[in-house]
Length: 133
Image (cartoon, rainbow, N blue to C red; front, side, top):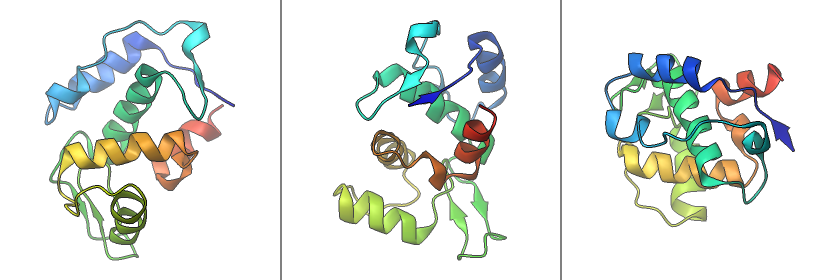
């Protein structure tokens, strides 16, 4: 079980700075209460949405066209900075999602499923949030 320390006010301020993908970033408006701060394999969807918002802000600043060519594995793509191999093995092969690494909606759906499967450490920013706990 992973405990998350999330200040909804601080998170909202962070998210407001990442304006490239507002429809998703502002989707969750529920306040965080202590009983909702635990991620389980079948966690409450809002908790995963909040965590994904934080990862999006950290990885790409909310920019669905972000590309990190410095990534040693051939680059990181899109709003969640997927590497091609990770995207293909998890999103396409495992979850059967469309093979469109630049599609922010597909990346978000894949990330939700990956986090539910305990794969938050696939993201540098996911590891940072866990290490802060």
